[in-house]
Image 1 (cartoon, rainbow, N blue to C red):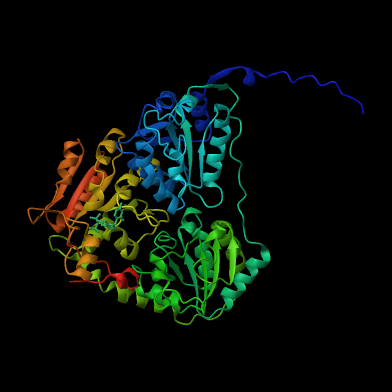
Image 2 (cartoon, rainbow, N blue to C red):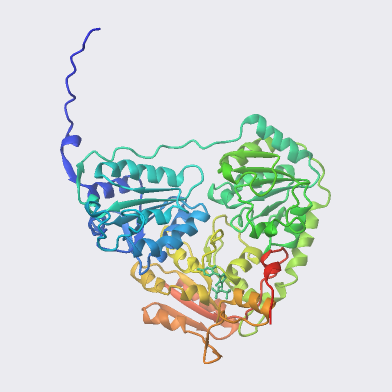
Amino acid sequence: MSTVARTPPIPTRSQTETRIASYLLTEYLERLGVEVIFGLCGHTIIALLDALGKSKIRFVSTRHEQVAAHAADGYARATGKPGVLLTHLGPGLTNACTGVANAALDSIPMVVIAGDVPSYYYGRHPHQEFNLHQDADQFQIYRPFCKRVYRVDRATDLPRIMERAFHLSMAGRPGPVLVDVPMDIFSEDLPVGAFQQIPAVMARPTIDDATAERIVDILAGAERPVLYAGGGVLSARATAELATLAEALEVPVAHTLMGKGCLHADHPLLLGQSGFWGTPISNDKCRTADVIVAVGTRLAEANSSSWNSRFTFDIPPTRLIHIDADEGEIGRNYSTELGVVADAKLALGALSAKALGRTHRDRGQLRSEIARGRKAFAANWDHQWTSNQFPLRPERILAELRKAVPEDGFIVTDVGWNKNGVGQQFPITVPGTFITPSGLATMGFGPSAVLGVKLAYPDRAAVALIGDGGFSTNPSVIATAMEADLPVVWLVMDNAGFGTIAGLESMHYGWSFGCMFERCGQAYRADYAAMARACGARGVNVETADALGPALAEALRSNLPTVIQVAMENAPTPTPGHWDINDIYRKGD
Ligand SMILES: Cc1ncc(C[n+]2csc(CCOP(=O)(O)OP(=O)(O)O)c2C)c(N)n1
């Protein structure tokens, strides 16, 4: 065996020259295209803040970490890029939990960078350390909802872990990833070339030719097929492909809450949302379909009427074909004839290419049936669009909002009448302009998420339509919008309580104990518009129904954030579907 003399490689400049990790990390984030980081300071992260302050990356400092997390989430939904969140350890990280979990349940890409205790103090209970079960254990709190949680134990691991975090947040089914960084690591030296690896460009999975052919054959030959679109269709920016497929084979389209906007509101094949807060025509067509091709959806409870076969889906006998980025979603709630793990855009692109020019079974009077069904349902509430009553009907608020906001403007909701009513009744014509918390349905999402949305698209309108409960969870958003110069509009539907839950309790128990805002037995209304004025923002109290339209128009013209507070009747949203919880409540003596 011959021996080859091996000369050690000559170290390059990038291996010998060193710099402090936080500055190298910041430059790396710039190279990845990170434009903005949302967060709140603490002693564990000021090393990174110093570097960020000298970089091109914008730092939006919020007054609560949940606000930062929702704002990063809103930014990610609007742009399709990962939202980046920076938090202090312990209480900072726990405050952000709800926002990160909300992003996780809606498959939103996010990278969370958190400071932690100095690594050389692990387990000694340095200030703010969690260590009851394991030393320096705070990162475990994020395990149930992050795609991956990393604690960086050596500075040399930081570049690799950051690359993994950005890669994983976007790859496959998107979601949040935590990078927990002991504060001393931010201040360590690393070789200047340490952050080499950037996330790979990913060719996402598509449908193979034979499977695409098979699905198109099934759809073309079916008697009552339905295309069912989830949020995955919107996040993959696949709405044009969906429309082509639907039109080529004349298949009606139903959707989930997050799938709203998948077809233009006036599209003749659009059935609307399914489930508890859906539309009767959507539930009927889904329930009586012979084939459903579902794309980018969890087939989750609210949109599936608690999976009760009498309301939304009757699978089987309906045959289900389910296309999703996550194999874990396939076959979980319904027996599935064919599952396909694929990117929604590529899958719908492949299906629509095959469907174009194909003959399909005659669909009879489908379009007129849909039009009739939609009109009949709208007749339950469309007369309220012009109602002059005060406190306002919620439908009048929707009507004024639709008139005031340009079609490409964003409507960001919270939970409550706002989410349920918009999902069911509000026409969305531009895909991606409806932003809502679905999986975790977090009250408090809307007022904060709108900040990230506006930052992503400063030239487009961004209105948060929210209840007074949701708005008052964290009114600090007003100060943040002022500081960050984000002229968003919060339209607060004020029914002096947690109206949706108050209505539910009243329906089952005859009162709304614990759900209304009261003081000394009287309705208690906080003046949120005055809060806005106190922050130097605009605040408008709408006193008549006719005043709302002009107030909205002026707010959208203004370059200051505006709170518009409008008293609203606590009217329930129609519920054509079913939710099992209503069978659980039992009233005692
Ligand atoms: C953080 C959080 N807490 C509690 C709930 C349960 N919840 C769902 S809707 C709702 C009421 C929301 O009240 P408001 O924002 O005033 O809207 P409204 O129902 O009156 O339209 C509550 C408390 C939730 N979804 N999220």
